[in-house]
Length: 114
Image (tube, rainbow, N blue to C red; front, side, top):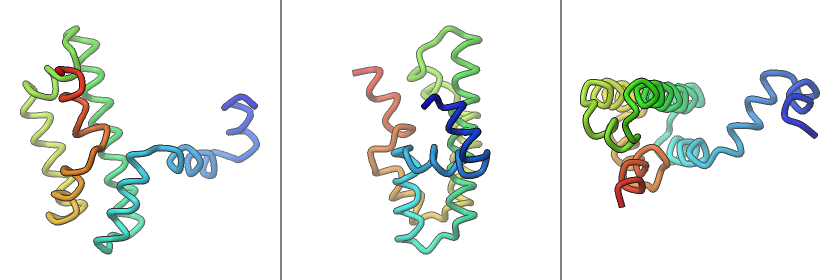
């Protein structure tokens, strides 16, 4: 079944739930949220922030032609803005724990440059 057919069968909201349930970074956020007592709204907001950050970084990559690792290292404004919002959403303990995990977002630069 094609993704478009699946979305039509499930509806927009359930299809979005299906996609998140198959996303490893969402699973990490969900587990951390449960561990640190975050609400489902906080988990969802953190996931949306992450997705928006990656979207912004990918747009910068398309505009500059730089590797994603370079963008993440040199775009301090983008990184600091994201980190501040993410930390506010998750709280210090959950955010610090998230940074230590092998999430796609946090490890992306290291994988590309190695």
